[in-house]
Amino acid sequence: MRYRRLGQAGLQLSELSLGSWVTYHNQLGVDAAVEMMAAAYDAGVNFFDNAEVYANGRSEEIMGAALKRLGWPRLNYVVSTKFFWGLDRAGDAVNRKDTLNRKYLMQAIDGSLRRFGLDHVDIVYCHRPDPHTSIEETVRAMSDMIVQGKALYWGTSEWSAGDIRAAWDVAERHHLHKPVVEQPQYHLFQRKRVEHEYARLYDDIGLGLTTWSPLASGLLTGKYRAGIPAGSRGAMDSLAFLRDGLIDPAKNEAVAGLAQIAAELGASVAQLAIAWCTRNPRVSSVITGASRVEQLRENLGALAVAERLTPEVVGRIEVLTAPLAG
Image (cartoon, rainbow, N blue to C red; front, side, top):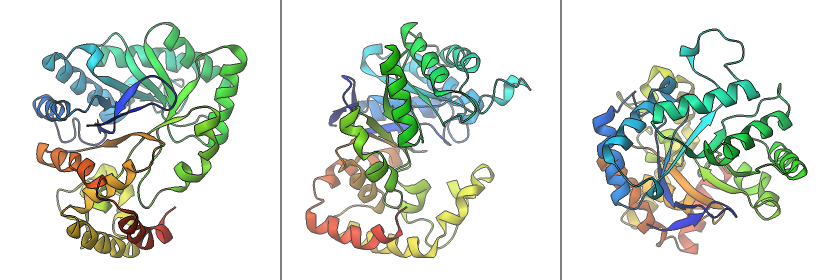
């Protein structure tokens, strides 16, 4: 495993990390999470990503229970969470959902720490932008989490470059803790934000990236080329909004071409797609997901595949995917 700094921050993250979206509680209980996290940790993974909204808080509970059972030294791993949507279990309170106001954020971090069983998280993200709360109010609340020792770094997820820069400028002006990381979607068919919109932020403010969905929710595994298989992520009712993208004919045709390239490299399409993401030096860590240890180990094999991505191979990948990328 190789490690990269989180932008210009001192924190180092494993190039590949393990996320809990969809899988924890929905597909994995504590026993399976322990097995999965142990396998990742043994392979050198040190970053485990989560969010308050995942499984309505139960994903944090499962990860917290797994961490307690595993008993790793706290310095050896990095845990993140994200806030915006709130918890359905919180009832009908108007300040609990789709917001980044101070009241919600300061209570959300306490709830996450209880569910994790930790005294701090390493990274906390604003899961989406909130157009109804001033960026200054949000920045002050996030900075205060760090001052109080409840989080060590903060950042954003799926924010525009303009909003990220505005938040950084507010923090700079008022001597507050600045956002150091963005968590955007990034894969062969989703590139513009990472490669173009954020381009100036990497050097101007030292922005780091922890990217999600390197397999485009499974499209880049090739398993949707013949439709939606039973038991797959695309067949889950809670993820019905993904289905049109998963059965896109043009993209699945491109995936068929990627499968040929992957076979020539002795790799799977998934490994090829993850390896491609790691090629971008601006990406601090690629967040992967898995519902089985075998799947996790296959994903981790992408690091070896990355070493075989010659300019000629990358050129062939670009011909297939760049015209379809957003």
